[in-house]
Length: 113
Image 1 (tube, rainbow, N blue to C red):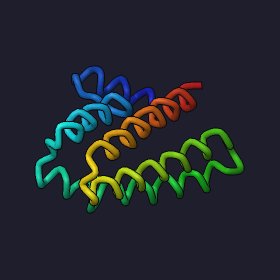
Image 2: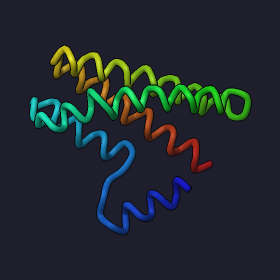
Image 3: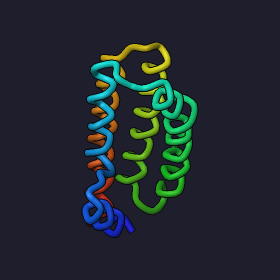
């Protein structure tokens, strides 16, 4: 499934996973989030991402421990990014988004095995 998502994104010229998150870093670093983007991240994407990452961590705990650990780290990074954005701590939010991008890359590598 992940390979199909990568292929589709590549075919359509879109970014997913770490590369897409790094684009968000560029916006956050220059405090360039629109009110709509800020609202989407703080009211929807980051809280939901943290919840879903913890659900996946629980699912993978007995099946694939390294992936479960990555999903827990992802949940923490989602939560930290959310907190930094709400506090308008742009530099800290950019830092945790970079961490999130790296975690996303590691998850993709884990799934590719």
